Structure formats: C-alpha cells, structure tokens
Image (tube, rainbow, N blue to C red; front, side, top):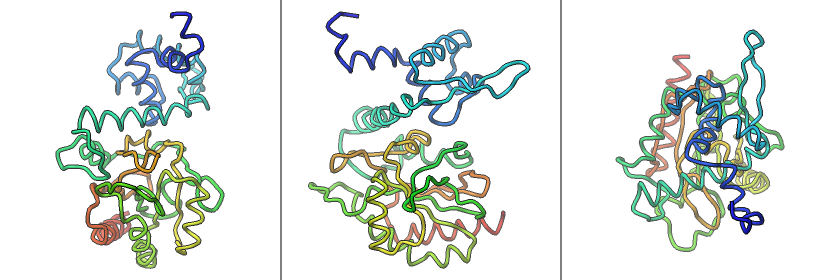
Length: 286
C-alpha cells in the first residue's frame, strides 16, 4: 500500500474489507449464518478460501470466534463492535446497488413488482428471523422482533414520522397515518392473539416522543444501527439525510418464522387490514 494511504480512512477500511469474498462473509454473518458450513453453503466458497477469509476478519477484529461444540471443537463467527459498526456500510452498498445498478437511479420509497427489492422481500417468507436480534425500544430496553408469548407478530417498517422530505419522494409519506391505523386497530390485533411492532431508522428518543404524542400502544423499535436492515437485506432509500426503511409488513409466527410479506405497501389502510387478517389466520393455525 502506498505510504500516502496510511492516514486515509477509506484506504484502511478497504484494506480490512479486502475483496468481494470478505464483504459477502460479513453479509452472511449479519444475516445470522455464523457457522462455517452455513457460510460455505450460502456463499459457495471453498473451505480453504473461506478459512483464510475468516482468519483475516478475526485478525482485523471484525469477527470473533465463539465455541459451540467441544468434540470436535467448532466455532461460530460473530460480529464484534467493530463488525457491527460496518453494517451501515453494507446497507449503504446495498442501497447504492439497488438504486444505481439494479434500478434506474431514481429515489423512491416503493418498488416495482419486477425489482430485485421485491424479490428479496418476498423470498423472506418461510425463513426465520436471526437468533438474538434485538432492537432498542421506546420503553428503554432492547426487544426481540417477535413478541414473546404471542402466536403472531406484525412487524412493519416505515421511513419515519415527523420528517420533512424536501422534494417529494414517491411512497415516503404516510408514516403517521400508518401508525395511527395500527393504533386504532390495536384491540383487534390483541383479540386475534397478535402483537404489532413498528421499526424505523429513527433514534429511540425520536420514537419515544412520537409514541407519547400519538399514544401508540405497541412497541416502536429503532434500527438506527441498521442491524435489521442488514440481517434481512431490507430495501432502503436515502431521505432527509438518513438511510430509511421502505414501507413493508412481515407477519411472523411464534417460532420467529416469516409467514407472510406485504411489499410494496401502497394502499396503507388496506395493508393494515390485510396484515390483521393474515395475523389472525396465523394465530388460529398456531
């Protein structure tokens, strides 16, 4: 490396990320594929090359080994604090790829039926949410994505409330309406045995203020560190200076398996009622 790069943060980050394979290893670990065989299967990488890449990422302090079996000794590869700090970079790379490589360059909070984002979201049906993934809630504690003790959880992501978008972004408006509709339908969700959790990239104190003002009865979770976006490869867009979730709805069962996906969400009232129907069906069949 040229000596002038020694003080360049971009060059140093590129040195750690290394190449295509290192980025994909981090992508898969963020998705919850933390064991060697799972990583090899998901990436399609030879065992020799994967061993080398994992060793480099551990040496750089991005991953750490954690034993889960003694005989023979086997390890899981988990993100360190340094690794978690790379998740916004991965999400920004995905957002750039969705917009400029897979898309036409326009900024939108929705997606076309034939888009890569549409395909990724609908492919989540039948998959389980990653183990141990919790996000800061409005009540001061980290909470799991699926509500414990409930047969179904409706998990909806939205761009953000109280945001001035400047130039209109298709599909970005309506977050306050969506929360109010879920609030008004809250008793119906509870009677159906379901819970509701809203997620945005806003900070916990911003979510808490909105929850107090609007008397939101369910939990709002902050994905400001982009852990959920990276774990599920959720579609995002950049608006008002921040990467934000596009609006979508997942119906998750008690085993944290995604049963239904609604994306893109264009008709918000219909989507709220449809999520209630799907959650009720999920609870009845539990």
